[in-house]
Length: 372
Image (cartoon, rainbow, N blue to C red; front, side, top):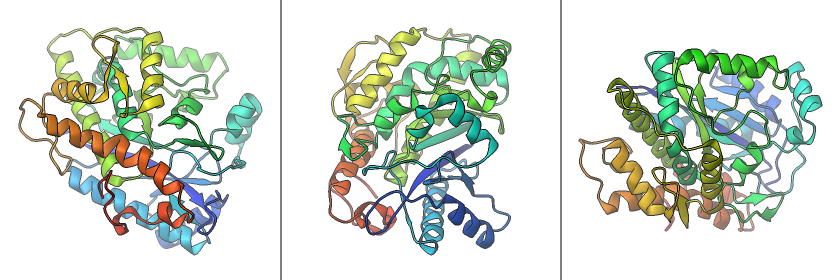
C-alpha cells in the first residue's frame, strides 16, 4: 500500500478581529520549545502563516487523526502567543503580508516584486510514495487532466482583500503568478523531467529546484510525487478525501504505465482553462471533463474520476473493493469538497465573530452543508 503524507499551511489571525497576525516566529519558537525533536511545524514565506507536515500513513483514518492533532497543536501554540489559526486558503479580511526575513525570501522579494507581496495564500500539498523517479514521472504525465477536479474539491478561498472574489478558489489564481507554476507538458522519462528542471534553474529566473512549482512534481526531500493544486481545506476530512483520491490516481497511473498504456495529452493551454474553470465555480457549476476537455456538470466529472480510479469512496475516506461508483458516492465527494469548504467559508467568514472560523473543526457542531 502506498503511503500518503499531507502538508497544510494555516493562517495566523487575531482571535477577536480575525485580522492576520505576523507571529509565525513566536508560534514556531513555542512549538520548538514544547515539541522538541518533532519538527512538525515550519516557517513559510509570510509571517502570517505556519505549515505542518504529517508522517507518511497507509491508513486514511490515521492520516485524518494526525491532521486533526496537528491542527490542534497549531491552535494551542498560536493561542499561547496571542493569536489563533484558521484553515482558510486566503484571508477573508484585508491584509498587508509581511515577508519573512532571510536570504531566500529577500531574493524572492527583489526578483518578483509585488507577486511576493501578494502571495499570502495557503495550500494543502499531498505526497504519495512512488518506487522510483521513472514511476513518478510516469504518474505525473498521467494524472495531469484530473488535477482540476482535486482543486475543485478543495476550493476554500472565495475572498481576496476583504471582498468576495467571485471565485471558489482565488488562491489558485494568485498562485499562478509565479513564473514556474501551473500544468506541464508530457515529460516521458525521468531524464527529460530532470533536464527540464535544470534548464529552468539555469535561466536564473528561479533560485533553485525548490522553486519549480509544477501542479504535481517529484519531491526533492521524499520518494514521492507531490500534488500542489489543493487549497488548505476548512475540514480535515476534506483534506483526507483529496489525499485519498490523489493516492488512487497515483496507483491508477502507475498501473497504466506498467501495462504500457500511453498517457492522454491535452495541451497545456487546455489544462490551464480546466484549472481556471475549477477555480471559478468549484463543484457548484461545471468542470472540463478530462477525457473531452468540454464542459460538464461537476458531479458527472467527479463520477468520471471515481470510475477512472476504479474504486468506491467509503465514509471513512479509505477505498473499498473495486466496483462501479454509485451516484451517492459522487454526491458524498461533492459534499465533502466544495460545499464543505468554499461555501462554509463564505458563511463562516460572514459572521460577526472570527471564532466561527478559527475554532478547531472537531469542536464545532455539524453543518448542514459539510461534514466534521
